[in-house]
Length: 193
Image: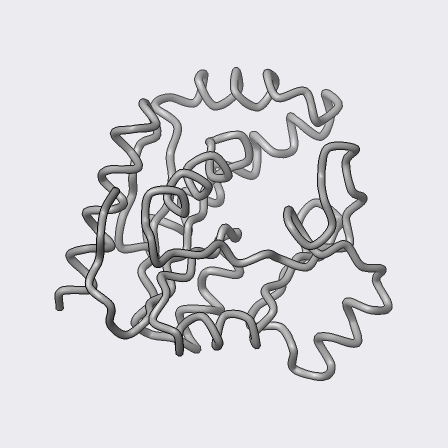
């Protein structure tokens, strides 16, 4: 287990196309870093049978989501495939103040919003080894119908183009242990600066 020195907290944005393995990577980072926490996003999308409210996401209706925007309670928010997602600002600020590595698994739109508010944010974009591999992963998880899967694959190239301009690190997820070690190295190097 990596033991980072207690210091000022940092935000690490993890983005990437649907199906690239962001969730698995983020969970492994939290498991291996003793001072890391994963920000739980608020969403208007329906909950799947396996998801737990407050653990996987905070599931709310559109009216409640809009109320949170109006009150300035979200650090960032975006509409993705017809659903809204956002990051609770108070939770992130509390974790930073406590010296935590705050991991945000969010899309590139949200990543850019966070970077504007917190310029020291570490921006990491996860890539699949190949487009064919990404398509296989996306279809293999069985969450989307054929049309939604096609839309997600089409969106991937747009996200990659944005990330190449706005993200500091592009990391290929070929083997979980390798990619997690690479990201831990990025975090450790950043915290030493």
